[in-house]
Image (cartoon, rainbow, N blue to C red):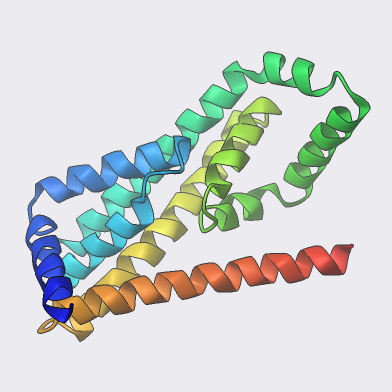
Length: 203
């Protein structure tokens, strides 16, 4: 079993060492913002590990991840904005739907900027929130400003997480990948736990 795992990570290291991996990181980061079934964070961490082992440039990994996330967030916002009239008309047909829309708007107005940042670390959260910002027609300049911050924080976090693992275990890339993934998984659990506690306190 260990031999199979090592073989897989050997293949992963070889694949992620190609300059084409920069383009893959950018493209996946874009699509992940619109379709949250694409593992962009995983690929960014892999890119960071490769940069840590000297195969890629950490600056380019961060740049490709951040710019891809920014483009994807704005694409999701644009889709939500274009569908705004249809969504609002459909959602406000019932009293419950109208209250939900009001709650979404209130939450965005109250914590919008920070929500855009934290949502990037929640599976599917970034898509829901960026679409909601478009649907509720939040100011474009406001959205772009916070999208830059959110994409930058996320790309730095995922890239450097992998980079530190790659640097620390340059002679054992299997361990570097596993530790980086475990770190990302741990951060996600902490964020989800904090959200659950906050939700219970508010109730």
